[in-house]
View 1: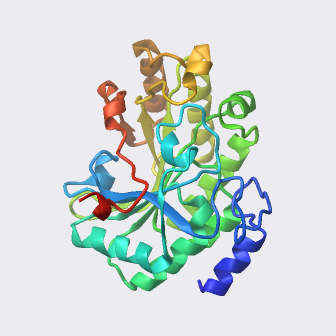
View 2 (view 1 turned 135 degrees about the vertical axis):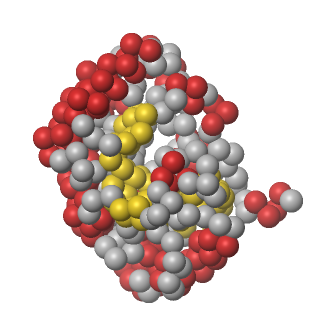
View 3 (view 1 turned 90 degrees about the horizontal axis):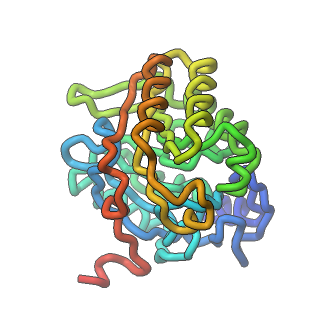
Length: 305
């Protein structure tokens, strides 16, 4: 991906389902970002699924901006409030290489949708880095953009947040979320195939669908699990059920979201997942705490030391 190709993609941006058409060479898209990549953290992370973090950590790079507007976003500092610092494609490639040198099992691209052309350029500059790239997103994707990742990204870690258009419109400003996300997951499976692990149990390719259970939304969660089972066989994808919901950012504006998950809500969704037969992960209830939210930066971390 050359500079000219990136500039062309940014000229009338349609990378995400918003298709806002903004000229990101001179301004900002719906995502809040322009042509220059901005990140807010690049570090080893030990709190992903065990097959992603392993024993040495996942090499996470958190990108600023977002194509969704989730009112409960735990990363709101970078997704909605503009925190982050600029990097060139060469500097991003150097981040990837440094994370590998630190022992990362993989390079974990967190919220990367709106910077796909720049990320592809950085991956190209790395050459054969020798560890998998993980595409870790909110699930609100275009299959055409995902297709650009074929041969470059081998692990997909998408959210599947909502089945109800009413909920997705209310909480994420994306009434079309479910259809978009399910089509995206189908494309991810087409690219990555069934889960593959190395001899240490570290994922090398495949799809793990994440679902964060929201308070007062257990029926929506169960509907999503049923829809996944209609589309995928249990051995085709994995499912990670998250109980970490914490009422941060604007969640307090919605009475139904202003508390943590109850044990009953979590138990009933877990039972639905077990019935569906998917292999995967179930998060410990104790993870619902703001202390698990990583620290983000507005300038390179080296400037703080």
